[in-house]
Image (tube, rainbow, N blue to C red; front, side):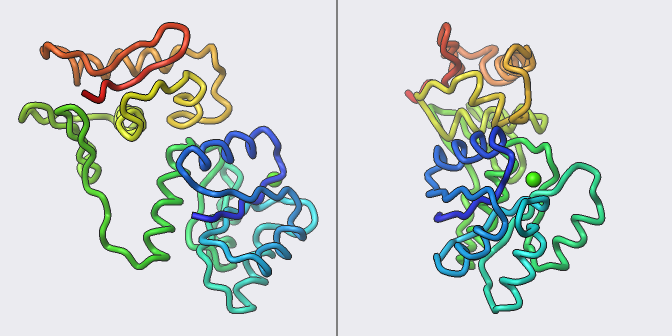
Length: 225
Ligand code: CA
């Protein structure tokens, strides 16, 4: 999708932009609200991702103005934690969905995919992923291997989904932490190793072929054959 991403916090903006690009989106990043509003009027976007607090013009004002002008481009509003009035205001202003900061990038990517489906009016939602005899049921949030159903927690599911969407590819610690936890997770955190351990116990234990591979000094990957 062609996305306009409006965010004035550079570190967050870089992490989000990179994740969106890795997912195959074309991203225009703008830090100022007024610039963003003007760009949204002249360019044709598939969706807008708007931070609320922005210099120039707030995300709410951008949404309000565009809707008043008849724009139907899907809008995802990014709001500060606990700012409940913000969320309600965002939907009132014409946003289609909102996400509370700090968010996991995997959650953001899922919301963007949902916006894309809504915009396309598509019902052809992908229901499962399959890699090397392992199936991931995207609706039930469970894995299936050789007929055995494996229940997963939300984080285990997000981690396995990310590995399965990039089979055979090494994903770095930073990529995995950013996407499955949050862009502000310290890189020295051992939460990733803990969850890889949980996933191995559920997905690989008792099978001859170990699918989750540690790539020393680099990250993790899922064997694709
Ligand atoms: Ca901001």
